[in-house]
Length: 232
Image (spheres, rainbow, N blue to C red):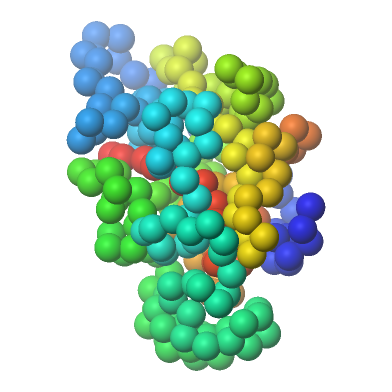
């Protein structure tokens, strides 16, 4: 694995206590679509799309986006990153947006993607957007994650542990990621953006996994990762 992905990692990641809530049995089911795109209600604070952005089926990889970009690219690097003002490495990079420290450019105090820079909102419209760090953690902490193969594609079947929702699940394919060399690790590694910067604004919280583990890390912003949209 390319070590730069893990340059800024949480020192330790552990499961947090599960929180349960109940759903009234006579509550009517909502139509599971938002603006024409299907979702699954896992009993969490947001509803999760059944497919990645750019995919038509749950097992399809879909498209890859650098953080805050709304168009796909065949390669991703500091040199072609949308919000790069100058620099070409973590040591000298400067940003022209989403910078919370003047060391790394302007200090605009923006730490969460705005709708105009959110690929999920731009592509799907309606209430769709990229999940926040807390919403990603909620999915992690309140579901059972099972590595499996579906229609020939490796990934995780994520099943709700919330009472009344335990028969509902989504599938996240191991779509790999894009860097300066193009696509890597399809079928063995998954990387999914959140909309939230790490305190060090060079990095963004993201979900990553392989067959052995699911983890939360901070990644450099220019990588091309998958997006699984959410809606309220």
